[in-house]
Length: 531
Image: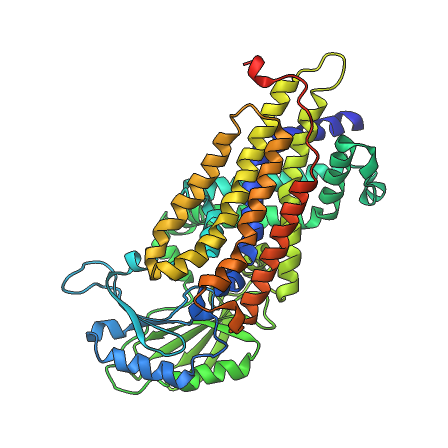
């Protein structure tokens, strides 16, 4: 009975991996890059963020009041200040928002002013629907990859449902894999590199799977929840508790309720509030501030903080006169263990809770997660080419391998190409105009390299080309930054830029070295003769 159960688990483990191997690689690899997309790679990608200077609280206070006088009074009831921290915006951004529209719009409308973090000079302004502003704000290569990880750029609900179910498949594969490998302690340290490629791949698959099992279970669960929560769980909760009214559900649990405007003038002490938050949580980063009913006696201010001693993001509530009210989670002042669990899902998924070393660990584990389905697929294909009655011909085996290299290696190449592209765009294209380039370059590079897999070549030669091109793309980053970068690396304006460029060069040269070292396997039968 036990052997039958293990056989069923093995079949489930195999078929789940086979059917989703390429998609799991895509999500896991993009997720590994997304871990560092904010703020580290976002700071690298935006020269405006590469200064060590922090915008003084007094200057923020001055700008808010200066531009508050220039907009209609309705826009002063909801003011959002987005800091140039590298988590969202690359410029200091003031958004004056009217939730009830104005004489030109019947929907939420915003007046936006964006300033350079160093000089505080006005860089750009916007007037129009709020949704259009947030949808069309400037992106960059790291953010594009991070957003691709979230929904594969398929949008809602399709993209989120797909990534959510891929999280479930990863969870199933990790759990069933643990039950299958009964000799777990022995396999933790078994890697027979000299016994041939097939055995090495099998051992690597087991080692990566067992060592990373806890990580894979956590990532699978959190990924499934984050992907499916807003698409399936939120409507279900609204149906059960609010008769299907999702807006009522959100209004009930929102952390920032609308204040009652008293129409009694009283200055909102933004300066003192920001300084108080910095003194309370000196290691945390203020991401943004929301000012409700500015310069009114009933004004309320909310600051969102990330980092420091807290695992999840915090929301600090102040009265307009600067009096601290309370600290709460981003979901508001809601008690209960379920809320505590939900609020740590995002930092657990991206490793954003204990500094850069945890993030780097998440990147490494994320890359092993990406390799797990591929190694499993290679084992499955290789098994079907062996024996007295193989079910897979040599030519079919080569075609399958070229497809895997083209789809997965093509994604890696397309992602790496975006980094030198970012340097070129910073030099030649301003602001949000850069947004039009990332999608075409990313998808056409990926599609083009996938189409190359249709050519009759051996898969080892195709893999060698993939390694060399990926290495060339990353190795080009540092020379480009030196030659045309807006913040020339030789000026050392940012230590982060130097570190990131150096790592790109090191990883790129490693890819090139591996490609040059890779020995080509002679194809036994020319595929062209069998087509």
